[in-house]
Image 1: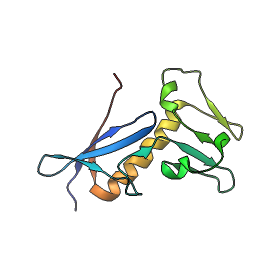
Image 2 (image 1 turned 45 degrees about the vertical axis):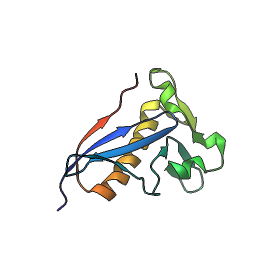
Image 3 (image 1 turned 120 degrees about the vertical axis):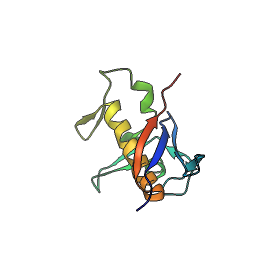
Image 4 (image 1 turned 90 degrees about the horizontal axis):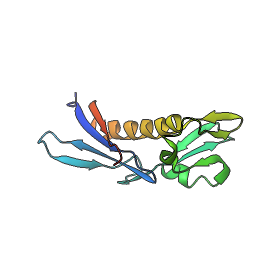
Length: 122
């Protein structure tokens, strides 16, 4: 069984990044499932497949009316929502989709995750 890891997430407006603390105590950037060091902070709602894509696949999804960018800018506005297919999504819900993808990608590479720290903007 892999040793549990401590993970840091930078949930950015345009891109997000992951790092973990190696067993020797040193930090290391963790690439996403596509092997990239940065993950676009983008969610695409695929109408035909009924799925939500996050990251590079979302950024390259094609339909700008079904793609959510820069949601972090609206985190402090409780009335802000994005409406797609008659369903409203809050910035918190969109951010949770991004964070879930980051966690899954990280767990595939480093194994069990014990604790996570998410950056707080200045």
